[in-house]
Image (tube, rainbow, N blue to C red):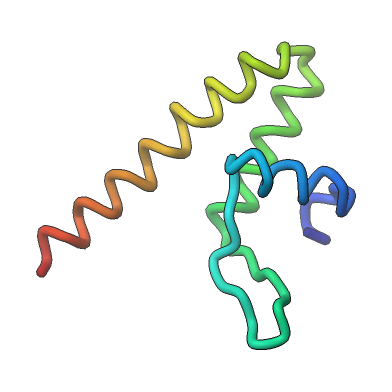
Length: 80
């Protein structure tokens, strides 16, 4: 995540805790992220820097970004 400047360890932590997921995984196993994920990571960093407790960050993060993902999933299902 060169655009966000986070460490590989933080990236792995966010993936492991299921706050983010790669948009695509290449044949060689490299994780690729989309613009939505970059925005999510930026929000995570902003909240962390503002001093929010980790549990509150996770709650806000899931509320804000999970809802958008759920809405796009249901919108795609409506198209079918």
